[in-house]
Amino acid sequence: MTQLLEFARRAARLRAPLFVGLAMVFSACNATDKLSPSDTPADTPEPTGATVDDPSLAVSFRGGIPIGTFHLPTSQFNSQYNGALRNIWPGALNSELRSIKARGGKIVLMMAGNERWYKTNGHFDLGKWKARVARFRGTNFSSYVRDGTIIAHYLIDEPTDPANWGGRPISGATLEEMARYSKALWPNMPTVVRAEAGLIRWSRTYRYLDAAWAQYVTRKGDPIRYIHRVVSDAQRMGLGLVVGLNLTKGGPNKTKMSATQARTVGLALLSSSYPCAFISWQYDARQLSSPAMRTTMSLLRSRAQNRSQRSCRG
Image 1: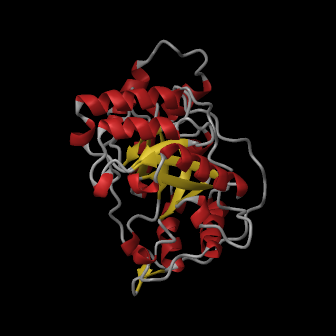
Image 2: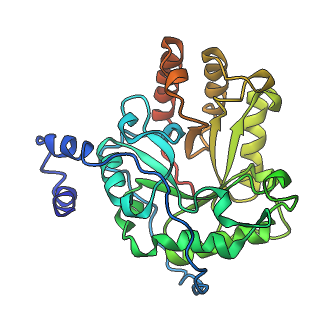
């Protein structure tokens, strides 16, 4: 850690010794969420309201917006992928972030883990969710929020789908409380839920929730019309936006997307300058290793890298 901080302070002068970054690449392995929830902590106070500039670029990031997949292994952050949704155990978080940053990557961080940890009788349990997030209070990863290696905290998946929550969708008020809780602990880390903005519209304006998520599947129709709609909804609600493809089940009849489909839809989504990241469901080494898909992903990476960088704050 001392070497990393020293490198950051002297980055302008230390351009030659690239072996420093390469050494860090091999210092960590991919981690998964293994812990059970702790007791529910007391609510934290409201954030102070202090304002801070948006995070700067990570040291090795090549510009544009990050592009990648859910569960992208650390070893796969490379010239083709530099973004991911990752669920990392607190004890491995800093070593993973150090390696991801050295590879020029950025992530959306999932803290709560699988939804089974924060359900009671099949329904969402806010207290259990807070307990899951609170596991990270003892881990100091603030430098990775400041430098933009962590671009957002992924609060929850598909909160408005009744099938996920025992027939009780999660309300906008509850989503806002989840975001408020996150900001009370980490005021400068943007918050995001995986749901289109139009699906989480409520009677008030989100103050602590920063971004929505739009994941394309074929049944959602023309991709150009789709990106215009989801961007418009996010803008009206003052929310940022993450976009992506459902590579695994986004084709016709829930089949895998072909390289041609991924190319057509991906270019449509990247025709908008509004999204802050392009992260698709999900990493499948076999699907992504075909020559046609590699060509498609290289093209999409080029387009994403040529976008203007955006914070995931609205």
